[in-house]
Length: 146
Image (cartoon, rainbow, N blue to C red; front, side):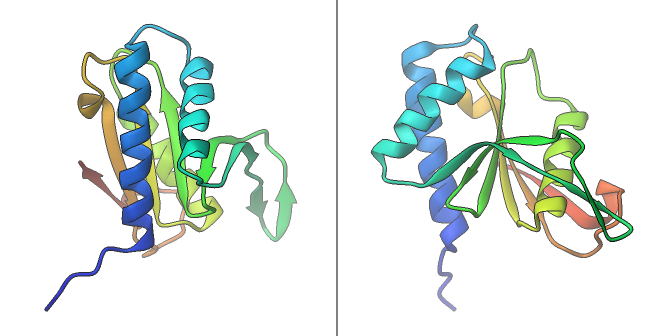
C-alpha cells in the first residue's frame, strides 16, 4: 500500500519550514507578534493563503457567542497555527489548540514556540480525530509530537 500525504501534511511541512526560517533569522526572545508578522511574510512568499487573528465563535445551545477567541493563523483554511514565545509548551497550550480545532471543525494544528534554541524543540503537531466534540480534549483528540 502506498501512503499518499494529505494536503494538511504538505501544508504543515511548508509552515514548519517557514517557522524554521523565521527562527533561524530572529532567534528566541522576541514577542509573539514579531514572529507572527515574520511567519506571515514567509507564508506569503510560499503563496499560501492565511487569516491572521481569525475570530472563533463558540456555539452554545445553538447560539453563536462571540467570546473573544482568536486563532493566530489559519493557513489555507485547513491548518490552525498557534504561535508562542514561552519558556516551554504546557498541556494548556495543547488543550487550547485542540479546542480551537474542534470549534473550527479542523483536523490539524501546529503549536510553534519560538522561545527555544532550536525550533524543532518547540514544535507540536496536534490532530483532532473528531471522535467526540465534547468540551473535554481527552475525548476528542490526540496529541502527536513531531
